Amino acid sequence: MPISILVLTKNEQKDLPQCLESVSWSDDIVVYDSESTDGTLGVAKRFGARVVQRPFDNWAAHQNWGLRNVHFKHPWVFYIDADERMTTELKTGILRAVQNPGELVAFRVQRRDFLSGTWLKHVQSSPYYLRLFRPEKMRYERLVNPVSIADGPVGSVAGYLDHFPFSKGISHWLERHNSYSSLEARQIMENRRRYAVFSITKAFFARDFHERRFHQKELFYRMPFRPLVKFLILYVFKRGFLDGRAGLTYAALQSMYEYMIVLKVRELSGDRELSTERV
Image (cartoon, rainbow, N blue to C red):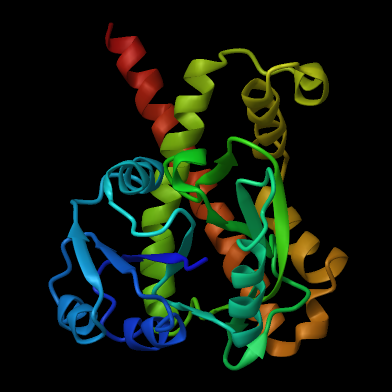
């Protein structure tokens, strides 16, 4: 059973060719573009991909719109970013998975992140992602770093999805994560408005999954010296030091990203307090 491919893009003329080459075996490749201004669309057309465009608002809304409005040729869809590459082993694994999925509606794949040619084997936070799915059974939540939620049982497939988040350089990574941190701060403030009172008990025992997840995240967000804790988790407890200089660099960057979120939440909290005082 063939598989459709969904690629999200925004000015990805540099990375897109290798991404599309890795999935060129599919006869239904959709480039879901956020109004690129470079040569992204030309690359897509050169590879015979269909192009669907929509202005980007936030990650969950954008991805959910794509799943509900893009017409896919096949019942199974594999989602991939332009800076990712599907390995031959993963191709074999997903093609085999959809032959007899049974009641499964989605499959996890294992991703490898690379920095300066080094696989971040130890320092990487979450190497498993839901990428192969029935689109009508999948939805996303959160403004940034969206959570994938499958409406049904989930399986796993063998093979790696290779990710090159630093392919455009450290400066591009910092610019992108500056934007991400703003969305993360907004998400935290929205969550706090929805669940006004934080409860450690609810972080572990709340029956509602979304309420429990909020309180678990809030527990982490309230942790003193969170950026330092993030660095120690990645570099020491996850043994990121075994990844050499690349592991140290990645742990430091993630700690910086966490501190950016801390500062922006503090700024937004101050704005809210000021607006309350004016009233």
